[in-house]
Length: 326
Image (cartoon, rainbow, N blue to C red; front, top):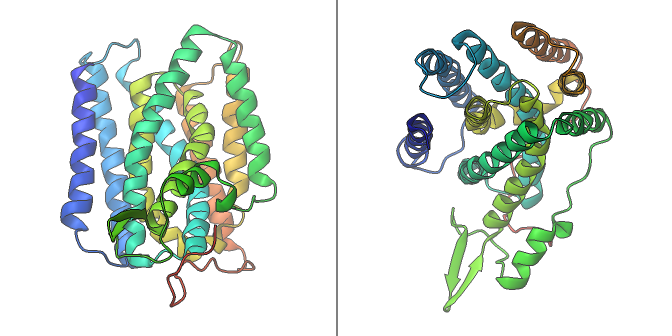
């Protein structure tokens, strides 16, 4: 494995360690102002990493035919695509937390471990996707059609979440007991010699499985920008690292972004068409960056300018913390 990959893993590991064991050692409910500061910090780190990308490709630390400028633009475009699609993931996470009545002070812990698992799963999916595109040209059309279908789903009716129908959760309940109540921030609890999973662990599994589902959309979207595995992985991971703080910013006002889904659908449509026409249409990289940024910004601005018609998504649970029957 090239040393730059090892360095990136160490960098991400350091950020996660500082996040959970130093800066957020105590369980607490992040306020909007605090979440905004964390979102600004994660965004600054991600954007600053574009400078690292430039140096890596300028000095040939990764074997690639990309110029430093092209690599940097592709990284920023990929980051913007993943960040855009993560906003849709925020709503689903809010619904999961509401369903399981996850105490707000433990939600950050669930998101942390969920993202740690996402790093592993997404690396495997990205390497597999890059391999398929490099070996089989027709996979561009498969991924393109997948993105077009994803664009259709985004503007369609939202699917309800039914944890009781999740095959992974059903399997977990067969092999290990599940407690009825929360036990602090623990995922597992031992009583009278019997080890059981808590509802917090079940919520974590739901967050993890939904992230894999969302990755099926987001990873092909970034592969439509570039097939350089390091650019795809770094832009993807640095975007989801900021998902936790972004969740606490957006979940309390998710109703204000009712029209953002149309921007997300157009982004998926744009990248999907780009993949379908990859043999005849080769737009400049900066054009893709401008188009995606414009679509995202337009959706946010238009949504915020509209009257608030939707009902707020309440993520703070009731007084009782018992989980619903699965």
